[in-house]
Length: 219
Image (cartoon, rainbow, N blue to C red; front, top):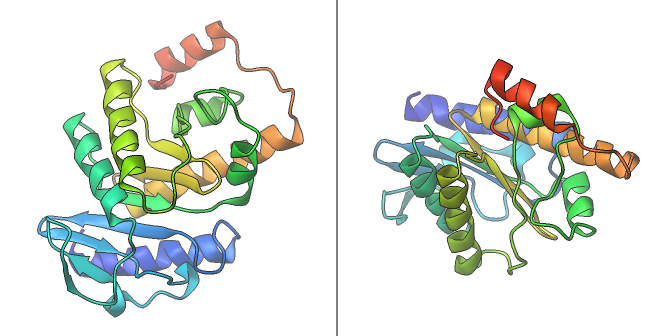
């Protein structure tokens, strides 16, 4: 994907998420990793009305080169890219949203993960979603904790594509903006199901094993 294509795709994904209610107001951000740096949505930008030419471009050290002022979350995104790529994942896009059902579920969650494995597609398309400790928005401590979780899960043979920041929202990552968006959609819809059916039992161990053997699910 060229830089020009990445700019257009970030705007397309942002508009799609906004129009379908996955993001609201000026909450959320999208970044793409390039060969010579990063693109990230501007600070306080509405994802539904992004301009490709005004996206922030940063160098590999995170210093801004052009465009509107980049989101403060670039520190978190850079940590995700570094940790995920160390574990062998081809990570080119990170999306952060304040998706309603994920945030609502995080207000009630007490375990190490946001969700149990309640549907096969959640297990296949998303996998484990560790719940990070609460930190203020933009906290470097949160970024370090997320990177550590990525590395520890990879070492256990259960690599992750998402984490949940309590009271804020999920961060998801994948090899393209479209794939990252699909991961976010599956996560948010599973959170909605969990809120609608709070006492849903998880899939059985035999069901999870079948998903691992048939589809390579990482649970």
